[in-house]
Length: 328
Image 1 (cartoon, rainbow, N blue to C red):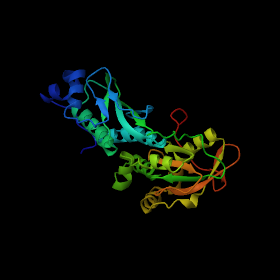
Image 2: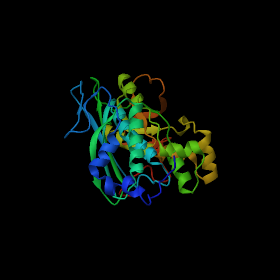
Image 3: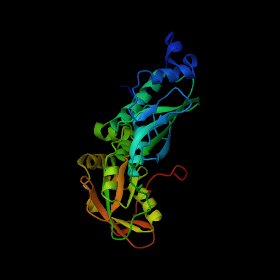
Image 4: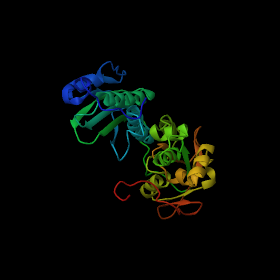
């Protein structure tokens, strides 16, 4: 699929842009042929959807993606943007130890946006939702000079207590599941004007969160957990502050993949920097007081002390650790 779509010309404009299709025509187009899973009791078409909540509690989260801030359509195809938006939310549900049940989407765009772009974007949302067996149950569309995608994910705890950021205790083991550093390396490649290595660039375009690892960790007694969206050190800082503990990360615990080593050598960057500070891979980090579940890797320890994140016993020295929309 191309990474961007040309503006329509001639007679195609009447059929392929929102200016003539309209809001409700777009909604009908985007919902056509979509099959909802059994947990969706009432899907799109009414004032609100109805989703089964057998646990009698609903886990909910929202992320907003803005063109030019979170994605570029000359770097990523619309379906990849859709998958990335869904993944960011589904990973947050998993980080609570929960299982996703549904997605809702808010979409804002200009009236001359090609319908093909929006159809592909929603195809991506559905594709990622299908990975965990849920559907897109509703949402809203609005006019905007900038393409904006807001996704809300719902989930169920299946009778378990939520795993929050506030439960880490001295003596716990710090561990991760999933890859880190890949998306940041892919972004660095794209920013230099390259499109390969494909695996590294692809990791930035579409993350690969370990969704099943969240409930798995909860069942194994994880004391705290978080989704790595803004960078490992930055996100572990949230756990340290919420739990009132000191987290000490061992850099030698990371087996930096050869692909990242090669890209780092080509760009003059220590790949460990991407591993420690790069976001948008949506790996999960958690603390455990007992044995680690299969697939989790120990990367450090939890100690008593003022809330902080150390690397090899010392404060991290290097580029800013993580992303903040309003300070970078």
